Length: 457
Ligand SMILES: Nc1ncnc2c1ncn2[C@@H]1O[C@H](COP(=O)(O)OP(=O)(O)OP(=O)(O)O)[C@@H](O)[C@H]1O
Ligand SMILES: O=P(O)(O)O[C@@H]1[C@H](O)[C@H](O)[C@@H](OP(=O)(O)O)[C@H](OP(=O)(O)O)[C@H]1O
Image: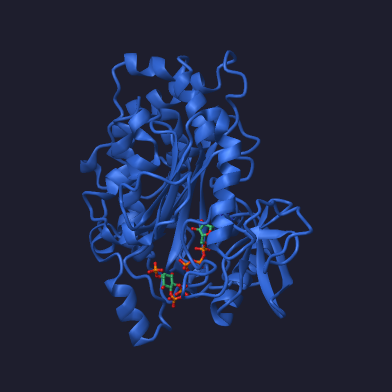
């Protein structure tokens, strides 16, 4: 789609890209407002710029809400298929409409049960998903619409960069009709076949050009195993120099999710996404700062994760493989994991995750150092892989020490993270096998990130 506006120019991918000009960093706030205005116009809202706090808006949206300006994928207002899209509320929370009852109620139940659960597997999972703030009913054009209320994954970001990565070769659930299955099979075909994931959309505040680039599913559907890396580079602002600090923050999250996913036998996540987010404003500051991250490139960099180790290769993982090569924390026992589709703590089959597994939020109160120590523990493997990783870990550790060094005030703030989203097609596991559909895609994604890490400055 091309939108005509004085602030939109330079369509490098003619039918799929909106690039908003930001000529100077100082103009960013102004331009964000402009792009919001553009976005609202596209979605049938008032042409006047307003924020969600504006009570006098003449819009079709419930008072105190606007369409989520930074929605990069999924069902959106006026996309010709769905009537509803994501909204943003003035308190910064985002609202996901329940449009298709079965899917919506399933997702709501997933969040509700996850919120109540106290078992370690669920507690860990909770740290990977957006904070859940219940459900609410709002009137939209005379109709009552129920919404799931979530924390905005980009909350507090000045220049949010967001990428939606849908994980899994199979993006339809076991109850899908034949038509739905066929439809899904054809979409993002190359990426899903070769990598086990696809990219339905992303937006990036580009440091090299000073423009906001938004690419949607038409672009994503054309990607293949070779070009996907370019899309990631674009998203990561690699033109400005791929930042090791950014990569570490994202990789740390991806590793933790991977470790969790390898250990779990409770769910099958179909058509679920990882939302990669970071703040380009912070990235720009980080790239401008000569110390200390940039001193790292003076060291010989051993940042190569050996593909020969097998652990991150995309092949299917058998339970035996997991037992011999999996994370160093023990796997839940077989008897305790079967058929546990529910997150409720009262379900007798809740896994008894051992005490060595200490879930911790990716980011938050922890310093880089503490957080990374935890990651190091959960990312350990009980074989030669451990040896292979040793030098890598040492290098990471010193980088992380650099990152929290006292002469970088504010360096403890995290400005990139990964959240698991979209649980409309989550099903209980029917056997004790790992969810290779999701795992293959996630492992391939981690592999790509690890190889990109080698390019980081
Ligand atoms: N917690 C969140 N914070 C910020 N943005 C979010 C959040 N949840 C969703 N989004 C935005 O909304 C988009 C769609 O989200 P989601 O995948 O949950 O919707 P969907 O309509 O079910 O998608 P699909 O069509 O793939 O089923 C995401 O790509 C992201 O841009
Ligand atoms: O990326 P695309 O091409 O937009 O494809 C959509 C995507 O697969 C969504 O996950 C799916 O939503 P569901 O969760 O509802 O299955 C939607 O189905 P829909 O067209 O039936 O809404 C598809 O159209």
